[in-house]
Image (cartoon, rainbow, N blue to C red; front, side, top):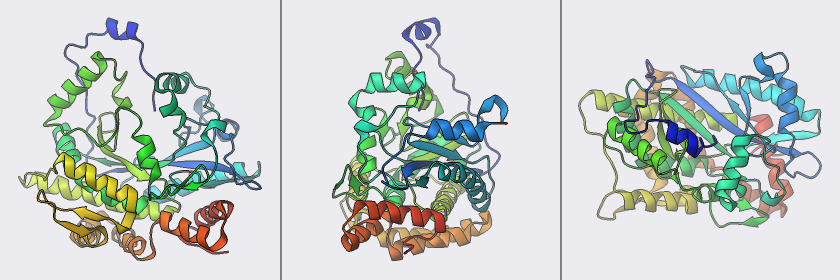
Length: 398
């Protein structure tokens, strides 16, 4: 998240004809961003140790900053990012290398890393905001809505060749928000209680005024006009403050998929990265062939996202404007069959096949609830998340 430009700066700028350059990608490149929680090995509470760890691992790098491990809003979070990758396997290896480095330094401070949409019981009121002006400004302007953002997600960037394609693909991708949300849902618990949701993170994040479902934009010119309007209205300071579930990313030349909860294992991160990359490339190919990409009606998008957040893989999705419904597991399974040839060409067929494993064994929200039912302890739930990340095995037992 980035801070806002000042009103004075806005007045100096000529915003009457905002031009946003799109740095086009050559092909369906892939980038992944994963937000990890730092947890104390004894109490399993969140620990505000990001700055000291990042300072240690940044030593020797230009500016004292590690190129692939970053601050987030709170000191209990370290974001690990990949470089520009061509394959899912490359992205997973990139994440694994940086994760091992961060984990080693965390272990020396009696800390573990986990990745889930929310921490099951730590209190957001006890967290420390990262000492950076843009984060302090965000908290001042968004007040309680920003203070409650003790949430953790995974973002996927997939390269596209033109801004017009980015808009068309982003519009079509909105219909697949519930698929990726249900598969990644990992935030059933928050502040010590079962929320009743598969993904409480998604609803917490929607408390920000520019988060949640994306606007349906006709073309790049309309995207530029809409961003100009938001800046002129002082709703945002930069384009990066539009935190939609899916958005074109002009700087990177990508479509960014931002709806996923934190994903507990790199194996599952790779599975959903394969789904994201294959899905974008599939839509890109259809666009090249002259097909008009499908766009769902807003009420269908809103209802289906709610169903995925509430029920996860037990949801039933609305599949047409007349209200017909189908189980989300069936819908996803058919989508995987459709995408298999694309994944094969992209070299991620094996990782895409792992999505079937998520459908069969359950997503993280279900695994966490099983641990809670069996052991009666949210500390045990955090223990299970630590095991899953360390072993890279969903549902790993002691």
